[in-house]
Length: 56
Length: 223
Length: 252
Image (tube, rainbow over all chains, first blue to last red; front, side, top):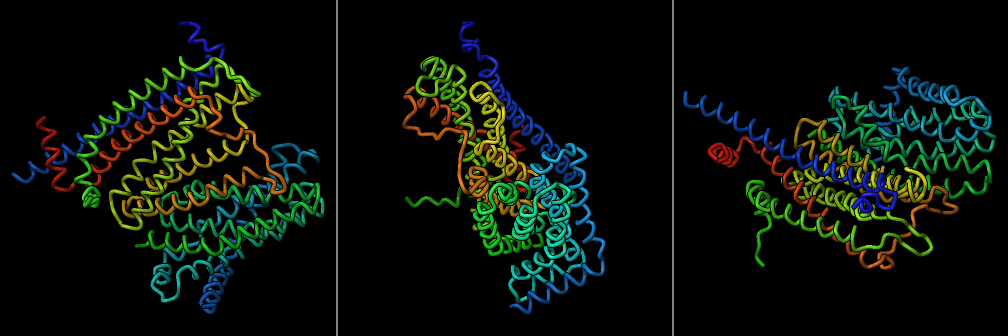
């Protein structure tokens, strides 16, 4: 196991490269989900405001 | 056709001559940038001679970049540009004339001042000659490509800094061959010929296609 | 097949399709990643022999090459949609181009980053002004320029069309940039990157490399569609069908 993680002594380079890829891709996914959530919340608020405005 | 070209060219030159400081600022920006480099990297003769071509070319890039912002701006603000879009003459011809005027005011002075900055960097006479030639062929290409960016960023907040972000990467080939020619001229003057040929080819291709792209960009920005 | 493609070109009809496809692409991404990584780490030799022996750090190839490919393909796709948008004046194609750009920029950055981490052990340097590295950097600047121009213009229609034109100009310039960096001295040419030939690569390595590429493709589809859905919602917020969706979401 530790042999696998050491990658023949090149752990820093191999995991540095893979780590950055994993980190950025995960960040992109999280950012997209957060973007969608805030967008839905904002639009929902807007449409509710309009609905209440129309009924009054 | 040529009458239109000349009219626009003369008009732009006349307008610029009424506000001469604009032309001089570009020129002095170029001279100042080039003069600051030796203070930063040291004044050793050999270092300067190696850095010289690259520094002069990068400074020329930045100077033409700064001037580009004003290429369409004044005409855009007073509505002249919109009138130009409506004329029966091909817009790309008008754009070409405007770019030509712009180059005569901002590019040509750089070519003429080049011997002076060349001496600051201890370049040989042959290298200075090649530098003038490469700038003469290269700076119009910079103006032509830059016009596309100027048209795209017309009237935007922070347009100037955005313009440099868009256009500087596209300047790479000119920078490579422009400064490459000067560097090679120090070793063998005959070897500069392919560089000059390439820059000339760039100029011709850019003169044909860049005005078309710029006028398309103008139409997008003004519609 | 009498399929009406323009039916899908409307944001309203593409929005639910994209929504259904996103989970599919995520499953495919994960499955392909699992296979590709397993194969890359456990089914390939520790060292490469030959005239240019590479130690274990060569495993970076399984992400370096795919990210580099993706960065270029995604730019082509971006330009393709931008061109379609300019020609046919379809809203969805501009939104597509917009949705692709950030993913492409991320892959470009990753290609540079993984390249640096591979270059250090094999060439002894993180960065070199090698043609491919430098043109990848130029490609990164083009992506950034596209995104910056689009976000700087408030009017959506102008932003779409202006950045589309910029992307097309960029695509024309990429070969010239690459060629000028590849051959800075027209009298002679040289490069640090070895000429690549897929046929010469060992089978297992090629297999995991291609599987990883497919995984990144699926990932790009998934993220692009997710972003596209957000873009559609933002731009069509006023339309009736978006309001329907919002009321449905609010109830759920």
